[in-house]
Image: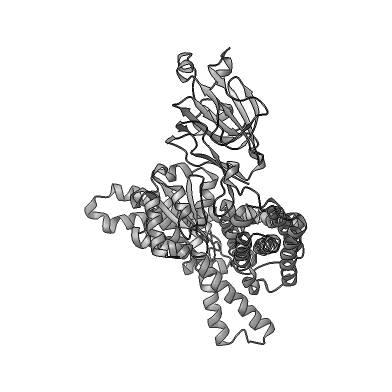
Length: 610
């Protein structure tokens, strides 16, 4: 892979630097927010050497690269500079749960490598002092402990920096807030269990902020608006000195008396919820977390648990969630290994082999996108294996003392009570995933042929449904019919047609051909309804000529109906035509390839993840 060439190609195909609102990355994926999605050439991006797959997720373009994602990201940044435009995205995401997950993930993600490295060092120190005879009071162990603890103790500074980048606010003032939380007066008050200080009647409690993340994230978020307001009020000639001064005077009581303590209590509440679940039923807690690990990674929600894990470590000195996450990772490894054994096609064997190695080392996205979302039985095996191993580890008290990547290389941080259970659990997860795949087998023909009217991306996870009509795309949420707009009937897209021909969106069988609507079932079980116009059922004789009847076989692009557009307009009816997948619940997700603009009949309209 030529990283610089790939970076240049991606920039070009997403519409150029000027079309990028924001860019960041996770372990294997580039994540773009774009000004205009019409400028994105998805097909060309998929065809680029080094791209494993492409899809849109909650308004975010995700380009799956794999292990070299950081190199590609850096190459793009070297050509475009650091890009972040929160003008529109922030308004949309402010109250959206997905936006909260994405924000927390983006803030914590850059810190994970240094946390992982020093976290393993923390585990090695435990082994050295507990099992290898090293003196905990020796200079060597003291210095190594400093190196191992510094990131965790001064976590608010790291979080303040990445939060400032995320929220596009002043970095030095953000670090100032972290300094307030960790100032010696605060740490000494906590150590001495002193009564709160008071500032203008506002209590300033001594709270443990070392290794915390949520308090400083919330404080920096408030800082963003305070700094912007003060900077606008102060005359430009005085801003250099007086803006920081006034912001410091405002943010000091807010941070120490409000955002810091409140966020800390929220963090404690979240951690307490997980702790309570573990206390009530470790089996249930472990089963749920272990079974859903791959799905959390797919949605990007897994990184948002980092704040909870960090808070557990900060408050209790240990965390029970990360060991269970590791069971999910090992289940993916075992599952991919099983697919490698069962697959007969060389290409599928190659994908499974590389995905199993990546998963073993903690990089699970290749296994999730290339294996679990391609083979139903592989996903079933992963869920069962992860759930059983997770329940086992949680029940027998597996725990971690540091935040690290969830993989076998992180074993040292699990040393202590329950260490044996973590080791056995890893074996259970890997072996169960492997054996279940061998027993259930895999269907290598799932969604593989273009002749069926469905196309699979390079990662082997997405089926495409093609547009039955030419016209303008209308987002489902904007359709003037609540039943369709709420997606209660299923997910999909709508088209305001400009031509009357209605074509089959895939190969399949006609299941309904009555008056104003057509129902089709694809060869692989996708159930699609094309509802021509809104309320057109009220027309006694809809000006729609059906070219097929129930039971007929159809092929992709075949004309199945003709609509007299002018007649429907003349009758005063809305021509908006919803195309919905009525068995949406059978799939992981259904989403439009693009959400606005014009579309040709036969062009990709929907992508379906199984």
